[in-house]
Image (tube, rainbow, N blue to C red; front, side, top):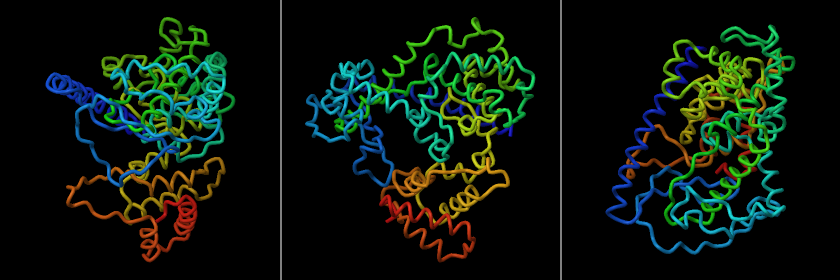
Amino acid sequence: MNQNLRKSRWLWGLIGGLGLGVVTAVCFVLLNANNRTQTEAPSAVNKPKELSVGTSSRSTIAPIVAVVDEPPNLPDLEFPPGSVEEACGLSEFPSYWENGDFLDNEPPQALESEECRTALETRMNALNPYLWSYTTEATSFAFVVLEKPLTFERIFADPAGDLARVQDALSRPECLLQRDETNWELKESCSADAFMNYAMFNRYCYSGGIRPREVYVENPTLVQSITEWKHELAESWIEEKCDTFAPELRLTADRYPELTEWLWALADPEDRDMTEVLYGRKSMFSANLIEYAARLGDDAAGITQPVSRRHIESGAGYGRFSWLLDSEDWYEFRGKPEPSAEHFRHTFKMLALASARRPDPRDEIEFDWEWVARHLCEPPYSPDIHYEDDELPELKSCKEIVHELRQSELNIAPVHRALDKFEQVALELGVYE
């Protein structure tokens, strides 16, 4: 298991290094292109689920086109009463990219409205930071339903108390685990949740945990503009929330030498030197706090997986569901390949196994069937094979594939029960055919 964690961490480090090179090259090309023509940029922004409009069944890369001087006329949209979009009047904001300097955009005076602030507070308190920041990578958080989920409300509830509970736990020998040791029975007595909360508090307040900014979008739709303004409001909310806490809560080596040395000692000796050179010691502090929380039994920490070169925690290797989240079937499912009989066969065997009863009920998994149905049946997908345009095979619907599976020799009762449940939910959501 420890080898897998090290491979996972250094794989993300390698990817991060390559990613920085690619980004540098792209920026150089675009800056040169700017001297030859008007500003050019790709058009790619994810639409939020509740505002989604028509979408293609294939992932494509938009061609680079010249920026037009006049912004498009954007139609009005209606939003549910009390939503951030409605309460803050986001459809009346100027286009997010209107002035061409979107990196310095500041939300208009919407936050001065009590109605807007209330709607934003309600939304942010309920948000899982992993799903807000890394929607496609953090599928474990969307898949597993937790009794005590991770939310911004949980993170900001009592950072000072969380730090005190962490320090108290580490002062007691029974809470000091040996390398790679786990003891989920210590979840309550050793305050496992405090380790997770304090890690995320430091990440979002002091270590650049905010979402990366989107690239310039050519001819944006109103939905795209509203989505980016919504992100800006969320970031403003986080920054304001962080400003309400004492700066002494920040985890630094100068302020908390014993705690930071202990966290650094948790890193594998083979990894320390390279990590320090590439990212600095503090990049490991939050990751090691999260993994330690998983080893003590915090379920939210126990489903974390690497999501970027800076956020490399692998709590899933220590949590109750490590047998699933470290499996090849999970990684295939997580990757969201195009629907196929072979992919569905592996997936429903995995789902049947995951939903099976366990000798210890604490090891049972409750997962979100609605998310599963959308994940399997709604594009866009990420195929392993990239076809030429004239070779694109026609995608089968979930209904066709499930019918094919039922006609096969897949005579395993738990699998058929999983198929029945999936079919029911997919039909209710309208994504089955």
